[in-house]
Image (cartoon, rainbow, N blue to C red; front, side, top):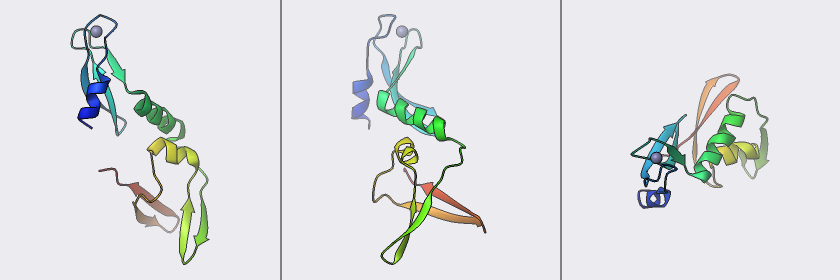
Length: 110
Ligand SMILES: [Zn+2]
């Protein structure tokens, strides 16, 4: 990710070159850069898209569905959740049963 950050360097509206930076916004690491002169911030388009998709669904009640695949049960997640969190097929998640009607799904992005 460090090398990727060089791509974030752009010419600021004030004329100075920006410095790459990771912005921590609402739990996301957003690639981008910041102007050392005027402080203007520029966010990576792909990362900003994920953040805006996340904001659309944050705290919304979304429908999922339990289905069966072989001997396992599968929780189907809406596509907007997959896109917003950048989830991929085969990724592992951690489940925590909180109450008789509540399961927390943790996406381990470390
Ligand atoms: Zn500037």
